[in-house]
Length: 201
Image (cartoon, rainbow, N blue to C red; front, top):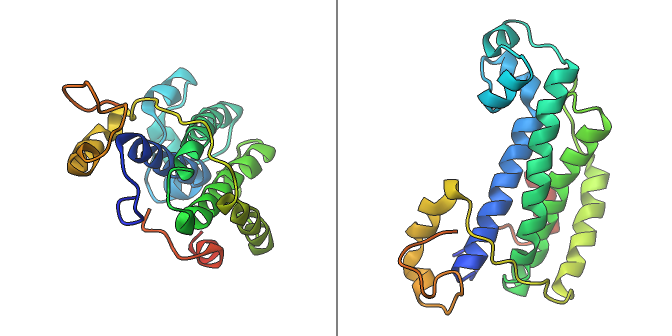
């Protein structure tokens, strides 16, 4: 976001939302693959609520309705963050909006497809076809001409507060409502076009 010309705590906070949403989508998509490699990234308290023993799951990765509910919760959180991040895209220079929004659409589409598969990311790995990626990238190209979305000034995610602090020098130069009047902070280099984004994801 800094390299692309973004400025202000609100812009950075929404960029962090998008990054976290994409990572949550990755985790939801790769549950089976991660387990077969001895890794579980799903929240331990969510697994406990569903009666899932992480060690037993690692020993024999199988999809169950209980696991599906955990994956669904992860995708719900990602979806919330995707929509919250959208206002941040409007704050970026027009030259990079298409690439960023294309990545957002493609990643969120992984989650939508996973939902249609019953949130089973153990039996199969959800992928978005190249043709679908191209269609989403073309759709994202309209972002250049879109009117700015309402500005979302929600605080930065607590887990990302240290990142906001790291760019405090840049934020301090702006006139951002999240920064003004506060004692402290609360709360991806982009390729040049949609084709490169398709190749990335």
